[in-house]
Length: 244
Image (cartoon, rainbow, N blue to C red; front, side):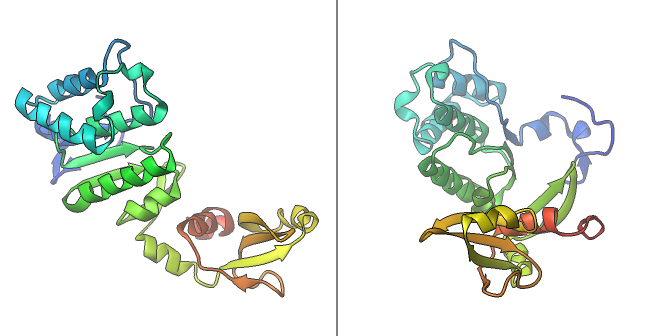
């Protein structure tokens, strides 16, 4: 819709503005903030979206049935979209993005508002869909990225700083994540001196997960690193010059 002030977007080596409608037909998109016309039912919304995508009625009807069942909305299609819960609206948006079986799927914070069960179901749908297609997923929910993504790009101030697989990020963190037990009072004094990725109460004391190059205190034990640890290490621990 808007022309870029810089750079180009290429699809199979061709500028997308030269490809035109053919390119747009290959895109499925779920925005972070899904909006609906007030009088639309779930079925109205999906039929309207299918018409905008140029789908014929028979195919649209079949896809709406398949996808509404996949995302658990088949029994709610007659209800107004505005009466849906936040999680139901996200699921309806996901069904819309998948309608035309696009070659490229762009999802912006897709699991926002979903409960744990819905999030797992969503991850399974996207993982299966991504088998032979390109899925671009933008999210702050690390567990979604760990479970779905084959390649993870970490961005800062609009610039891509790192591109690795999830396993590669975690391997780079080996020997840099530690567990330390301390009192709540000690934690208050210690928290400004270290990068802490998690704290939990344990038998009247605090178990503190610390990211450090070397053993932070004498009784610290090494922990199995996670992708979240890697993110904190790369963007909070490393000196500015090293990070960039």
